[in-house]
Length: 383
Image (cartoon, rainbow, N blue to C red; front, side, top):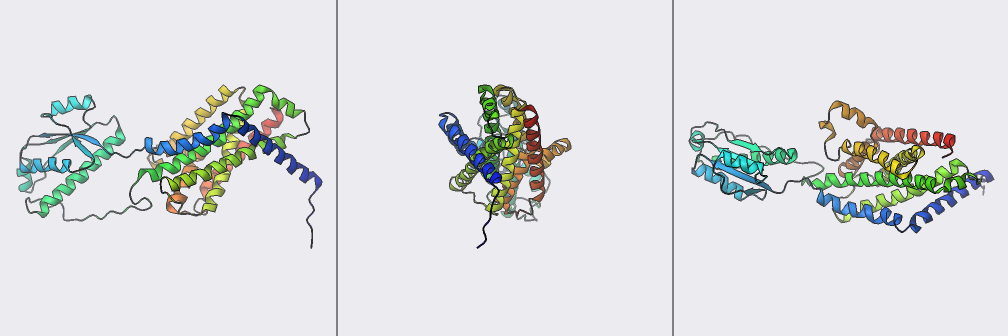
């Protein structure tokens, strides 16, 4: 049987890198604070954020100013009382009272029913019902108005079927279905995004703080006088944090399935491959920042700047398609935006690796550039 002989030089390189990886892992988990930040903090955020930052609107304070005072207007009020989303605010007798209550944040939406509304409905006319929403929270206002429109549609349809009005706008039946998120559960969208942010933070922040801390303590200078090459040192550092990031990602997938009931519809192998490349990109960003930062404070300010920009433009809170053109252009170099799209597509839609090829290309280019810059300046500056 043929044997494969590897050069002694190659075996020595691998042995040195493995020793460095072991040294980094031991150093991390011997630190009583750092290993807790690596393990418990990401898990706590994964369990808390999706519940605390839920953008679903579960309760809206509604005030009704009834100028009609008929069975029709009283029926609208009864429809609101039977809804789980609306809470009627009493003692609002006029539009002025509703405006004052809205200024005090006691009312989210004000509904004003005009006089002769029922009579207009019986004559086949279309009455104008005024809806005023508190748009300080624009998302709450827009979703609340959409709820109201659906409630009014259902109510008009009910009275039309009962033959109590000549309302003829319900001749078309609209059938609605939701793909990939049938129950319209916001956690199905938010949890993969939170997982992407946590993987990003683990990759970039741990690598940056570790390198900068060693620069401050002077241990890197001690390593520089050893036979260890800078490529060995760089690879050993990167692989240790890469392993931690992959383990954290796997645990995040288990939490996503066990706690939130979200299962991966696509290929887990493709998901792991793309995550591995994304972690290389985030590690490259972290090392690149550490090359130029003189201390941990500087490195944290730079990383916070990058993360605020990347996360706000990533599509975690706002759909990418709703952003202006200049923001969408910036997102071409935003790895977190690509990675969130990857997670949502593979986890919810079951997209294949081929479907994700453009996102893969973007992340790979980012990883190559950041790591190339790191290696270049790592050698020239001797850290």
